[in-house]
Length: 439
Image 1 (cartoon, helix red, strand yellow):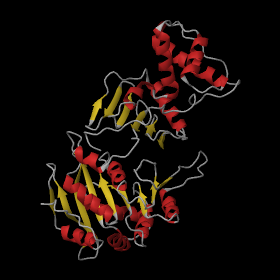
Image 2 (image 1 turned 120 degrees about the vertical axis):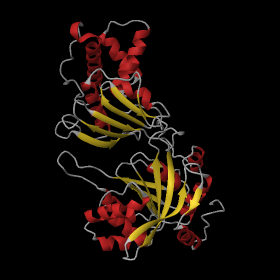
Image 3 (image 1 turned 90 degrees about the vertical axis):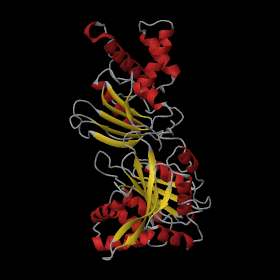
Image 4 (image 1 turned 45 degrees about the vertical axis):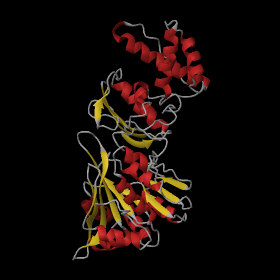
């Protein structure tokens, strides 16, 4: 979440599974491509032909692409290599077949949070301090980027081809993949990878990294302990999921947390978590399971805490209904520019479910207690908690937010006009949100 904290790769295992798209298994896979003879194609053409040949040989044998099997397939092809070049070629081939190819070094870096590919020679990386060009990382050509995107999509069980030129998926190790093929992607396949972390940050780690002050951390602990319902808001990449996972780690171990997500990204450090993930339709347009259905199913699973990973559609109606019917302590994330924009954002989402403005605001005021808003500094990339708002009614009866606490960049936490309301809500449940830390 913060510039001082990286995202660690899961076990450094390969992203992909199997020998890649377009390759059959068994003896009927067809002729092996001819070896390059050099000339205009050069070393890149010879390398691509060798990768294809090794991939086909593994498919014929039905062998898993382990280091040993790749080495055996490479020896069978008898490339003009000798000495240490063979070992280097084995690692490179295995990376091309089951890994992320040129992106493997970036994805293995524990500080990397995002990897973006715009073109064969244009790879960007975020290590928590903003995007920078990845030096020395490139693909041979646009076709290589497309092959990688399709293989990763296949590993995630998703379709990616000319008929369906984009996909959003979660890879087996938890990395989130988004890919768009040409022609919607102009010039080259665009690839976005958000690297998963093997465990959630703790609130202490986020405090040490400067994402919130000690007094701000005490306030957030109080929100969770008082079982207040809240949303974490912010822009893209502001750290909403990271903060929410840390807060869920504070939930009493005796409580049951049920998560409903479009893409399973939340990994709270809690002993009793049930995770539900949405599913897109298959190639025939059937089998879709949306987030709204998951929220309905979650309500039948005896949740002590109902969590919606990201509220961005009609499921807002089911979430608000749940929070209004005894499911205290529910939470989720929502994209919003400011905390004050959250009621308008939820109003727009509620209209997708056929909920009129008055009904939405009536439910919102009684269902939601607080909004925790995150910002990201445009220069340094530093992510931090900026405000905590409470929900109030205006004179017309519509929901508005009021700042209960403003957390400055220098670490101070100042009470706002809504502070008394937040104190009263927490005190009603025996919790002191200030702990003497606000000034």
